Length: 185
Image (cartoon, rainbow, N blue to C red):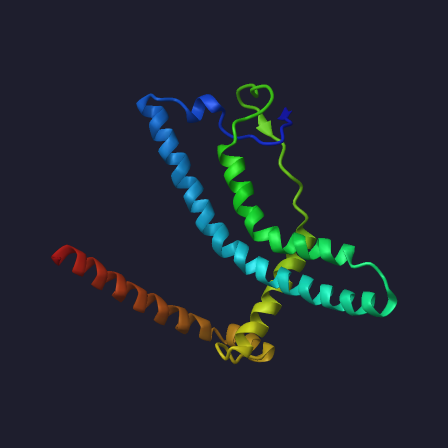
């Protein structure tokens, strides 16, 4: 049995409960929301910048075409606005989904909510585009100098394991130094 609802989030009574358990639930809700916001801050940015680049290039091409033919820039402008708002909208959606009181009837115990359909092909294409744009950006900035073939060889030979091992060792040494400093200070 599925329970169809637009947003399945805590009810107003869950958030406004003044009992100790209600207060604990409120704190937990904010901790989870904060964690989600941090994750979205990174993941959203990784996808937002390439999307913005694509829409800016598309808008520029449409601008040239519209200028030459007298056509409309409206569709290109809408796509650009959508890309600009993508990152901000992710924060808003997470906040609303977690904190907005449930609307409509309370679901029966054990009911599941309708989940949005995930379009794996579109997500894969966006991820591939994001990897491509970030690779170009980091190459132009001189932060990486890998060619696609060098990257395949690096992965295939297992050299990344040595790099990962070095990074983990440095991280644990830094963490140990931090904890030692905190304990002695």
